[in-house]
Image (cartoon, rainbow, N blue to C red; front, side, top):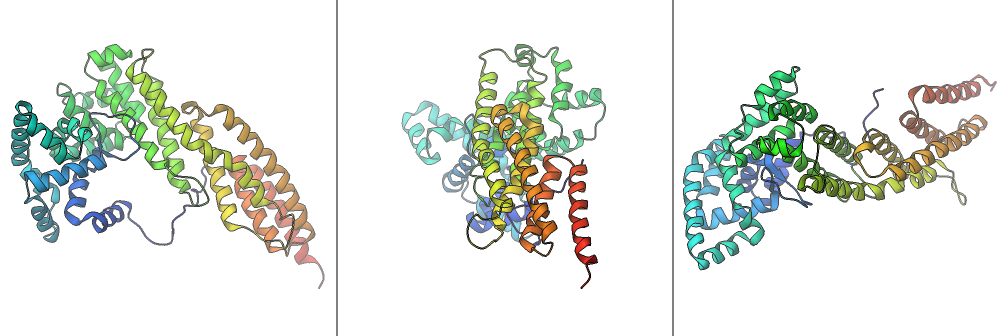
Length: 420
């Protein structure tokens, strides 16, 4: 059954292009050159919270620190070259790729000097902004090495969605530079980011590896694919961070939960993890973190529903549109969690909320329908009833919602048929 999308917190009437809007906002806040530089690596950038580091993903704040270091101490002319390209409407990526050999030469020279001089090493850490960024410098170097391939990896990820034959997908996967694990990790992060069904990538890889056990997959050199899936699973945390209260982006939250489920199932359903292994520990902790962020919103659903569909106990009757929106979005989230519950440690709480909302909806809809039958001109009751029916369609099914609509329409028709 296809359902309408959750009501977003932002204005839907204003036409938006997400990528263009995001880049424009970034340019306004951090400058054209830096925003364009970050955009060139966007398919391997991740946002906080990041509990685990992966060789195929770069924390955005770390990349900004590298940008500051490059433009201040390594290649000061980089911002001007990028700004000129933007003004001339030329591809920024081509400018960066053209400067990569010089950038890499200078970085490697500094790193080599740091290996033999404690003072140079200390200064490098200070310039980069700390030990965390310094430790990840090899990943940044790899990102520059394969910068020109990131767009091709992204295109491969999209194309994989149209490859129906697993053998063909497996053959395409073999074209990845598996022997260079650092480069493969970055490219696979870009691939998985565009894969609508990551399970097919994993299932196509297992025959190539020769088995589904963690040890076999690592031994065959296909570990970067599993880590790319784990990295993208972790990346969903940033999409639901601070998503509490009345003005949450329910559409974004539902998409993050659904995406998380697909990613987790792609590895938990195919890979035989070793007990206590690093991969197993990562998956457990990421799942725990995801559940902890969803739990507060899940607990709000029943109270939101009850308060939004019930007449005030005291004072004049009025409808709270914010509470109604929160309740409707909560039901959308609940329906999404029903499909993703296997990948989240929320079974007990989910069952409780699922049953509570079902019982509350039936009771409150019955009450509102009776009030509406007595007074079809009551706009507040009519609005509650309409929103409640939408919630019932999501929580139960379309048939039940149609029954309620017919009952409401019958009451309305009777009013119209009354003699003046």
